[in-house]
Length: 341
Image (cartoon, rainbow, N blue to C red; front, side):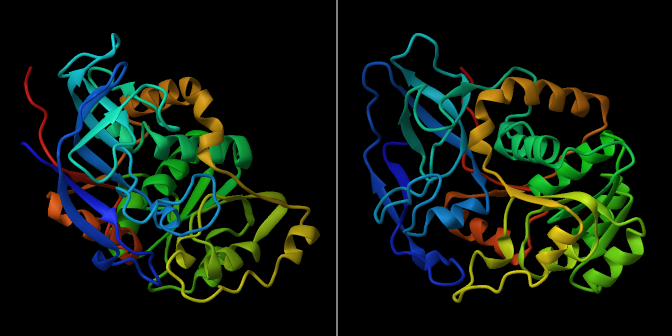
């Protein structure tokens, strides 16, 4: 390749993000400077938070600027290195964005530049062994503080984060109920991830089913959805319950302000706690989470599911899969195969 293909943000979305929000362009391949490496992206990560990065508002990261390459985590291969710790041919994780090539240095961004350990499937650092797995791990264990015998309810349970959070709760001896959309996702949660019960929000009354499946009420609610599902869960809190706010995908593409839960007084009545978090606050503790996640994977206690699309031209459409419920597990797109050194 002698050009660098890119998708840049062309205009900010109003409602559902579409391909019209992005513009395709080709530019020269960049040259690495002193202390930098040139990377070729192989796999891109797709996460609901990317929708928030497209908005022109203050957040935990600056918004993507108009005309800027769309931000995304990636697994890439070193093609040229001016840094002593990285050699051509090595696979790394970084914030590579929607492009073929990127110049990076180890201290760049909150992901930095980290080598992928040998024996690890190349896509895993984008999912269960990356930010996704860390989000599930710390959100559940640090904020949810599950105890053996607790009932843990997870929304968005067939997604990349929810599926891992629910399985960690099961590993910790909890009874786990997942909320997901459609028979295929619900079947995977019960038969493969071994959740104790599932609720199909597309075909069942969520509030009613929580009451049926959680007769002793909910001790921990790990929420990725917000909106009506959050409101339904708050109706079934146990005394001193913990509500972990990880995401609110139900409202990410809304064009009008969404009504909040009308039953927040249940937090007072049940002496419950509701708290949000961002995983970047835990990145310095990755060395604690990753080995434990690897151990659970190797023992078969934790399974991960990936939805891998292919083709550079399909990048914008792949982001949409997150908001239309098409993805099952971690959403990834493959751009290229690694080159044998």
